[in-house]
Image 1 (spheres, rainbow, N blue to C red):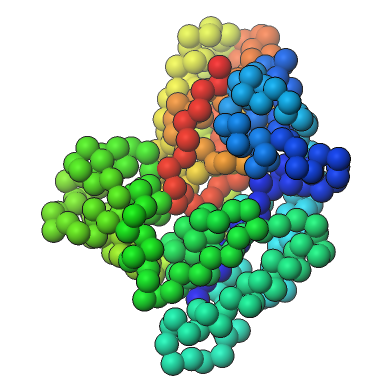
Image 2 (cartoon, one colour):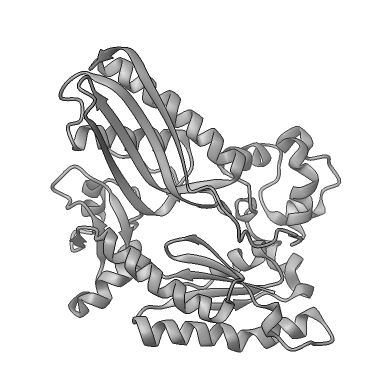
Length: 358
C-alpha cells in the first residue's frame, strides 16, 4: 500500500504562511512583472487567472494585475522541505522515497493490520494518511494532499485529483474504472511526444488503451505491453530507496573562445536536446535549470533557476538557458566553456506544459 504526498503550491504556501496578510490572495513567486524574468510558483488564487510556473513574469502580470510578486527564498523552501520530510519519515521510517522538495512516496503496508482483502487494507490506511496531513498542518502550518492506492502509479495520480488539502483513496477493485476517463498523459512515462503519437493513432483516454487489441509497439516501441498494464492500473515498481540520479548535465569546451551568439545558441540547442533525451529515457523531469560558463582565464560562473512544476522538453530547457545567460549578462566576454544542467529531478507522470519565455 502506497501513499503519495504532495505539498500544496509549496513555495507560494510558505510565503502565505510567513505573511498572513497574503493569505487568500494571488501570490506569485518569481521576478516582478516589470523585469525580465519567470514565475517559479503560483498560489491557487493566482492559478485561477492562468498563472503557471515557467511563465514569463510580464505575462503573469498581464493575466493577474493584482498579483503579489515575491522573490523566491530557496534556502527557506529547502529548510522547510527538510522539516516536512522528517515528519514523513516519522510515519514511514526507512520506507520513504523523497522525489522532490515537496513530494514523497511512503510504503505503509508494514504499519497496517492484516485484512481479508487489499481493499480493506487500503481503507484502513486512510486514518494514517489523515494523521500525516494533520501533523504537517499543526507543526508546519501547511497543507498537503495525499493519494492512497495499491501502487505508485495510482497513488501519484490520486494525489493530483483533489488539491489542495485533499485525500483520495483508490481501491484495488476500482483502479481500472478510476483511470478509464483520464487522458493518457496521466500514465507514468507518457510524455508530450508519446502522448501526441498515441493521440494520432486514436488513443486519447486511458479507456482507449484499456479497450484496444492493437499492438502499441509501433507507437511506443517495446514499452507497449507495459503501457497496457499501466492503463489497467498495474504497476510493480518498488520504492527507490537507493542512490537516485541527482542531476544531469552537458558541457562543451570550444576550440577557440567565442562570444558568437549563433554559435552559443546552437550549442545550447544541442545540449538541451541531449538533456531532454536523457530525461525522457529515465522518465524524469527537472525543477532546476543551470547554465555554466568558463572564460579564458578559467573563471567559472554558474547561474540557475528553479520552478515548482518540473520541465522535460528541449524547447523549454533551451529558452531557460538563453534567459539565464541574458539575465545575468554572462556573455560579456568570449567563453571557453558553456554548459547546461538540470537537477531537482522527479518522475514524470503527467505531461509537462510548454510555456514561452516571452
